[in-house]
Image (cartoon, rainbow, N blue to C red; front, side, top):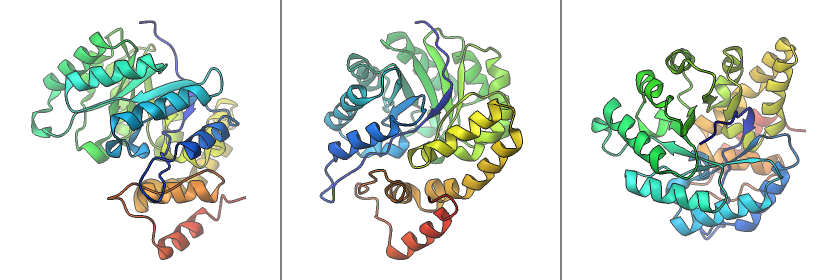
Length: 297
C-alpha cells in the first residue's frame, strides 16, 4: 500500500441517537454536511466518541456508507474497525474498505488485557495489516481500554508497509516523545488524539489530530494549527489555553453526553446518547453552559 501523509484536524464523529435509542441517520448526514463547511482534513467514523461499542454491524456499515456519500470531495474517511478478535477485525475492516473507507483505525484489543503484551499486539496488528484491503492505523486509547501499547511495539509496527500511522489518545506528552523516537521515520502518521495535547504536539512536529473537541469547535481546533504553522505561536497557544477547559469538560467531566450537548449548543445535531449512558441532568447542563460561555458566539 502507498503511504500518504495526514495533516490537519479530524473529528471522531458523534453518532446522534433518537430518544427511542435508534440511530438518527438524518442528523448524522446534517452534521457531515455542516462539517463540510470547515477546513477539516476528513472524518473518523466509529471512533470512541461515536459510541461505537453500542452499535451493531448494520448500523456501523450504514454510518460508513452515509459519511462516504456526503463528505466533501477529497475528505479522508477513517473508520474505526477494531474488534476483539483478529478475524472479526479483518472482516469489518474489509467491509469498510468496500464501502469506500480510505483507512482503518484499529483499537488495541483489551478484554483479556493481562495477555495483551508486546508480542500479542505486534502479532495482532501485523496480521490485520497483512490482510486488510486498506492501510491501517494503531489506536491507543488507554482511558477506555486500560491497555497502553509500548513505544517498542509501535517502533516494530511502524516498519510494516500497510501500517501508516497511529492515533495516541493517552494525552501523555512524554510518551508522545517516546513514540516519535521509536518510530524514527517521517513516513508514519503519528497523530494526537485529544485537544488537551494539541498545542504541545504541534511543537513536537505532530501534524494531525483526531479529537472530540473538533465535533463542536472545529474552527478553534483548526485555527490552533493554522496560527502555529503561520508562525503566530503566541496566539496559537492562547487559543489552545482558551479551549482547554472546554475540552476537559466534554471529554472528561461530562463525557459523551456533554460533548453532544455542546454540539447542540453550537449548532450541530447532538441528539441523545444511547443507553446505558445517561443524558445530562439539568444542573449539569447549567455547569457546561458556564464552561462554554467563553467560546459561545
